[in-house]
Amino acid sequence: MCGRYATTRSNADLTRLFEAVDVAEPLRASWNVAPTDPVPLIRMSKEHEGRVLDTARWGLVPHWAKDLKVGARMINARAETVAELRSFAPSFAKRRCLVPADGWFEWVRDGKEKQAFYMTPADGSPLAFAGLWSAWGPESVLTCSVVTTAAVGGLARVHDRMPLVLPPERWADWLAGGGEPERLLRPLSAAEVEAIEIRPVGPTVGNVRNDGPELIEADPRVTLF
Image 1 (cartoon, rainbow, N blue to C red):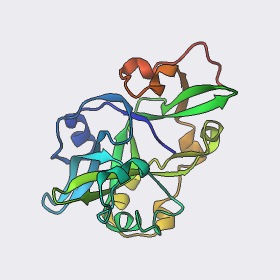
Image 2 (tube, rainbow, N blue to C red):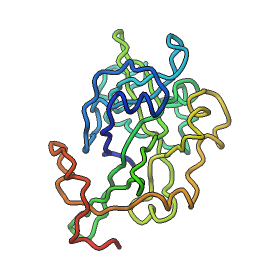
Image 3 (cartoon, rainbow, N blue to C red):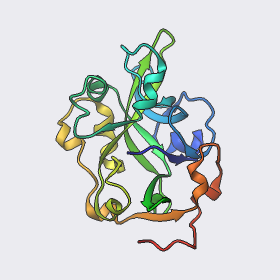
Image 4 (tube, rainbow, N blue to C red):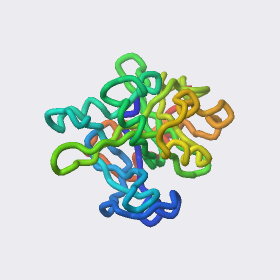
């Protein structure tokens, strides 16, 4: 799963990167995004006739849910079932989005200890996770999920799942709606995965109250596998 990630770029940076109109709240850089936090996303807007940068609560809440608490259990949607499950299928068909990120965290257990790792492009370029969005309740609260897929290449040594990362040439098709699920949901190639650094980091990221750039600094005491 993807349960913690970093997203630190500004409204101006993201609107430029994704060629989007800014309708989002002012973004706060976060190196430790947790479920139910407000996060930036890129979605299509009929009103603006194109892409917009918006803000959503992380954890998709279907329109039929009784309250927002459902979203805490729906931060991820599995690529293998996203087009079929009642909770996600309507959004997969019509309300897909991109979730900007700098990188994501996973933990590897070694006995009683857990080691945190941060996965991020080695060249510092941004990531776009495949996402879904939905509007819930009379106030149309915007919520979202990150689509996950089986981990590829060296990333499988850290966790068996990873976010479905979309390179720029796939953004338009993902945002368009419709399309063939098998093509839309294909994972990164082995060559593309090699560009992602697996960085051991300190244990403080495990506490959601901690935040700051120090959370993604490499821990020199840890040897990578």
